[in-house]
Length: 132
Image (cartoon, rainbow, N blue to C red; front, top):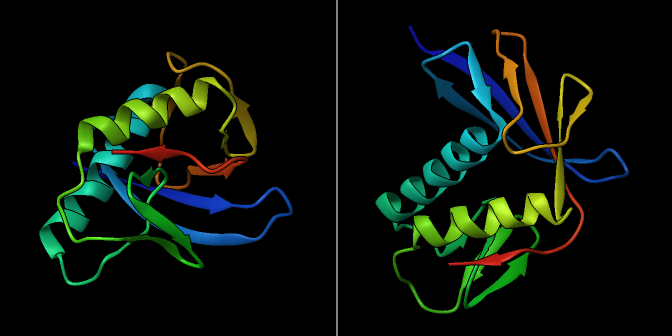
């Protein structure tokens, strides 16, 4: 049975600028696995749809310009999920963004937490992060 985990992107001033749901197969997940699953799903969705050059993801792809609701690729191409994951994990470790799980900050990629239908994970981005 898959659980729906609510992910919210928020500014440090409290403004929500993106919300999505991630389907999980387990009631426990590490921060590393959560970030990886989120980024891979964003890239998969973008690469499959190809309808728009606007990528609304956690990590800015290389050769993209920041827009109001995401990143616009200068030239349409497939985004590299492995590169995006690597940059996102490095950004977390270097305080490019931090995570709140039900209003409690998690501090390590290896930290695990329990997930229920009511769990909310907030991604608070502090600096622009450029990836693949």
